[in-house]
Image (cartoon, rainbow, N blue to C red; front, side, top):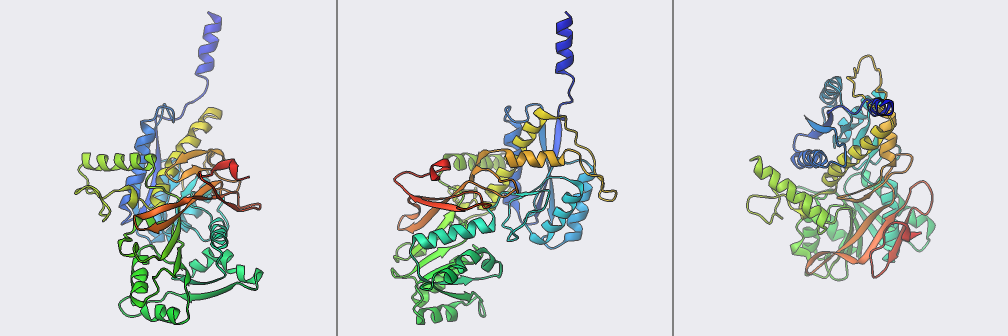
Length: 425
């Protein structure tokens, strides 16, 4: 009897997680698809008894104007005063910087899924989007694999030069390398043709195009009109979202169009998750965001339409929940209201963030793993090419990105099978 009593006391000596934990999702006003990814990631966690078995996550969504830092700060402080386990977003760099500052002060994990050109990470921030240096090295490896010795960098915004700085260094290390840099500045009505004609006159045939994914179709269409979309021309698109746009008009000209992707829209995991989103939105009677690649008349969420940042939002919630589950096994966690004025930090924030860096998971964007600095590491970038039947993975070629802290930054292998994980070493 005494043994039974002691066992009961032992089992109940700890304080389990509360039955409900709120997590904050900050989204730009038009980020409907990111909201959907966030909500259904929470739903999937709540229906998985292996993750947080005694706790339900609650999505607290705030819509933030992308340039209104003051409003973003107010909404974050209000949400934290009610008690949050973590904050996700926003996607805007302007508002995200202020949110990061608040999270650093109160030691609350801040989870990002956006491209951030800065080379340092805030203390309480973790970003699932590949680090710019890692991406830059990936482009270097691909340019080397394609044996380009003379090419043009056509960029839209100054951050594109940051993204490609490793590529630009190639000319300083190789006297035979010639790199031309041009800024993609449209004329009246978005006319890029004068610039593209100049490139044609100069005989520029190998082009790295760095611009918003929404700009890519216009640039390629006008390039086609001026005659630089032939079988003698090659384009490397730096966006990871080439699979989300319509490329029908460019499939038959013989132009070599290449890019990387983190999200494989043909994978069973991606298809299953997207199907959940579609059925859920229809069940709740909510309007589904428009996308031209829909395969259903009333549904425009399609695997080919899922952008990298959208998939990362979904993966971020999975990562957070797994880390919280692991942390719960090692210490008692309390979600406490926090005050932005007095600045008293959350006592469990540091531990939770450290656990997030340790967790390894498989998500819509493949393997999710971090180095000690909170940078994503050991992930796969698939190389895709445009063919007559659409975008295809390039003959089982995959670029595996290892840690960015020590060389080699990445390794390129070609094999009859896709290579992942430790097979690169």
